[in-house]
Image (cartoon, rainbow, N blue to C red):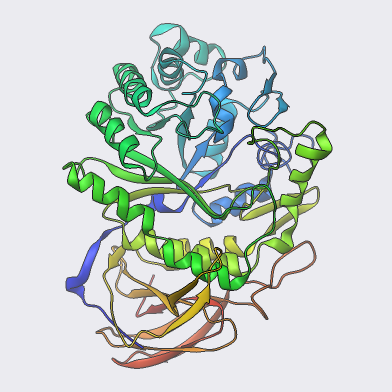
Length: 499
């Protein structure tokens, strides 16, 4: 196959926030994850040094918190100050100690060097409670909540720019779910109060690829919104923890852009595509495993609904298949950088995260390696790409249906701060090389950074590293040069790059 591109094919400059992450008060993401006071690997504030470094190494630009479903019964005021009030989290059916709250979250973001992105309680919370949170974070000294922050030892405002109204309030699984009619009005009133506190903040609100929901939301709230939020998990295994096989994973890669196209089409139809961008602020291939909790018939014993969550810690589940999908999705949001301005991998730590923690260290899963590749070696100016003779194969998708997919997924970027190109190439073939001809203008030496495994089931674990980034010198670029991609691999080829 051949790929073509030129300097006249620029889609635009992608936001660094496409490589964002997400953390929720679920299982071991916070407690025993990034926040582990008393562990010898933690710093004086209780944060795991190894996790902080790993997140800095992938240049995490923004972290969404505190949920997720957790937020829809979370009252932030109980988790600041000296007198913390624990509560029973009705979303996940565990006691939340509230020792990690707003102040700890902001401190974590500062240590990582990323922007905070707070998701508010639009389930059992009120619009006033949401605006009070903005007061606490962003006002200098005015009002009781800014003064409370100062009393808590934080004299300067946190200047939290990004806020989400609600999580998945369209879903019957969400505490305090709302109807189509309710949602537009609630968002409008919450946005009004929050922007009366700080007009400089940027707001998003929970949406999905449903025409009625989005039209009603935007009809009421578009003047206040900067973003529209969508979520997606492709492998729907929250009740089974039985992942799709590699062939079905390849089927998922055919649909990385479906939701983006639908929501972009609606924004364009309403004339809002220049004002409102998509925040794909919760995504992963695999759903989190949490059986018998988001169902009408609840699990009764902890053996039914709580302890099974430990199975999320099985590192053998996070293979080269996850890496292939993750790279294809990152390519997709790069190619749609004109409308997608933010994304958040769900989650960053433990559960299905790219980082796994244990008492004595961390494991960097295959998906972490993909983020490292993209945040360290890809450019920020995205080009459109044209193809000739794209090879395809037929796979059986997760619904048992036959589906034709492209063998190779491609994204081409330039650098805004230096010469050179970076080409991301994903070979989806399980056991065969793929040949790609680079038929475009460029100059200089070619260097490859890639990950692959001995098989599509390769994974990283404690004492086991099967998926790592490797490098190679490819030679001098010439137009029409052919590169051979290893089976089930993710490769970024830099051409003529000088730091």
